[in-house]
Image (cartoon, rainbow, N blue to C red; front, side):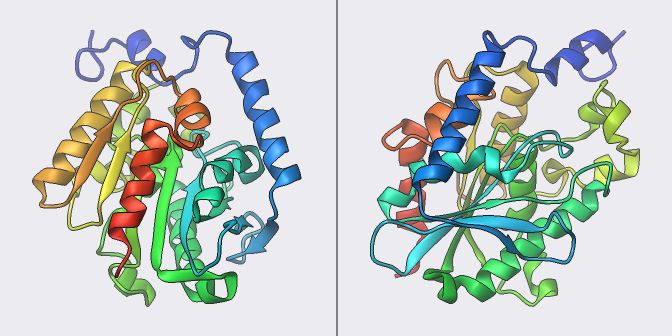
Length: 289
């Protein structure tokens, strides 16, 4: 019996696990080593507070060139309930040498908060970065957002031009974005085994699914690994098409053979890779002036 599209329950549950990735423990170890290397070798300021919640901090990595710099915010994944900014420090290695400062975000996690509060934390972070940009050596008109998995969903939430004015920000505060392996329709997640810990309600899934309210937004890269699960591939393709259909600009980038881990570790965070180069093009093209 199908519970979402053509998936039975076991098939749907399998869409949202990493069980099909070979040598997963070795990949996790390599990711941790890359993050430790970046924290040890790149100048940075850790734990900058952007909000009152203990988890509302970010790590800032200045670019290695004269500023002011464009600023790339990275939002980690972990199904909105796990992982932290320190484990994704390696993302900075992909950009600081190319003249882009990087902020890696921490945010409150489920079950401490609900998903709507996580979205608000991300908005608060953008507001703080916009206010502090000059003191950080960055251009407040050149803030870009990126993230993977749950972070890809949060990127899509931030790309909507409707929220910034209500937070005292310019509607174009986000100059561009990159949603990697994002979840843009949350109803299948709600119907999957993941919801035993996420606890999404039908109303939350509806109101916090970016695919259901595509409006005006900045240029967007939508990326997903070519070896990822069918639902991640479908949602990325559909969201990129919807973003373009709404009169925005979207580019779909599918690194061949990349999985849910390596699409960030070996593509987005590696200078010269196709996805990294696409992000750099977007940054250069979208910068005012």
